[in-house]
Length: 214
Image (cartoon, rainbow, N blue to C red; front, side):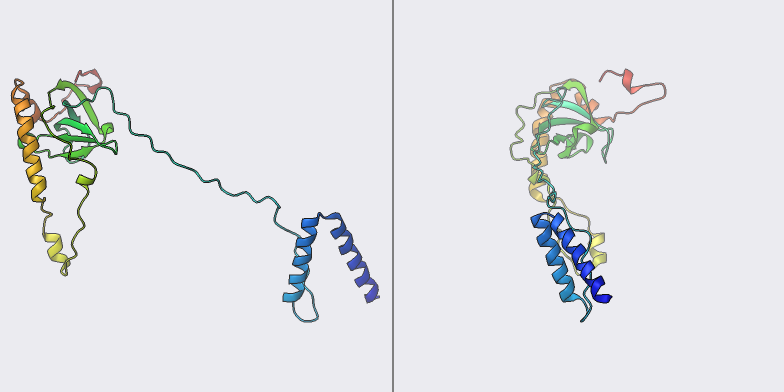
């Protein structure tokens, strides 16, 4: 009786293999052989009823192309901008040029309102109608690499490192003075512009920004 059941089982397995494709038959035989090999002695494990599909989808490689940031038409070299975020929020600055990263290079200048040479996103500025001539200001040496922070030197005492304030390199201090001197000549040629840059932009009660003309 047991021999008859075993023969019927083998016959059903043979029928299933006959209905499969060539690749599927090969995979099923391999699974059955590996199951017999890995199973306990004298007892063969049944092959799995599931097998992977012939076509396996692979994720496509995406090539990201970064287009240069388009500068707003209202922002041109020499335009006075109002900062809307950050440490110098509300300050008026002068736009010098756009860097490769798309950020704007601006300066207060530092001698007038304390805003040094820095990079800002054009999303967080308001362009005004005030503009000065900055053709005499040389800003060719300033790029994104110039504003990267230098690697912090590791100190043995952590408390001493926290107490020490980061000092600005001497060459950057000299660059700031050079730019301020060139901007000062252009600012002095416009009446009341120095006082305009020194004051911060604020809103009082009843003043709505969407009704203002900058």
